[in-house]
Image (cartoon, rainbow, N blue to C red; front, side, top):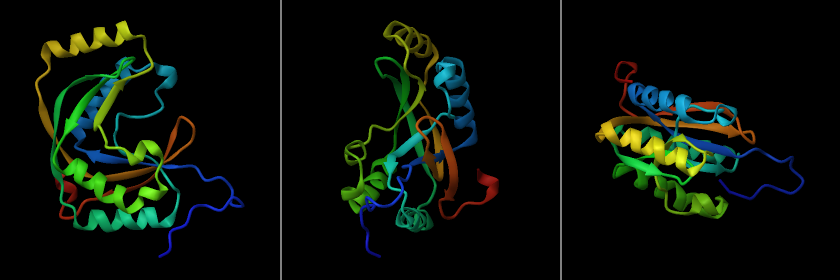
Length: 183
C-alpha cells in the first residue's frame, strides 16, 4: 500500500494518539493520583503510557498496529522512579519491549511523524502537570517517602483521536495470546 501525506485539499484530519493498555490495578493507581494532583480544569484524560503523540489519521496506521499486536505477547514494565517534569510529576516506566515496539513502528512511519514522535521516547505516566514548580516538588517529595519500584503488565495498544485537549477513544488492540481472564 502506498503511503502518502494528506492532500492539501482534504479536510484537516485530527491526529491519532497511541497509548499502551496496562493492567487494571496499575491503571487505577495512576488514575487516582492523576485525579488528586492534576489541575481539574486540564484533566481531560485518564493516566496513560503514550507510545505516539500525533500519528496521521490514515488506514495504514491501524493496519500496521493490528499486524504488530497479532504477534506481540503481553509483557512486564517496571515503574522505576518518580520523575520531575519541571511543572509536573510523572513515573518513569522501563521495559526492554517499550523502546523496541516504539522503534519498530517509528522506523516504518518516520517520514510521517512529528518531530516529537521521531525522537527517542522517554516512557512515563504523568500524574501532575501545568503546576508551579514548588507544588510539583512537594508532590515528588511526598510520593518519594513511600515509593518502591513495582511492575505491571502491558496488554495492548489503544488508539485515540486528539481534539485539542480531550481525546476520543477509537479502538483497543489486544496483544496476542491473552484471554479476558488475565486482564
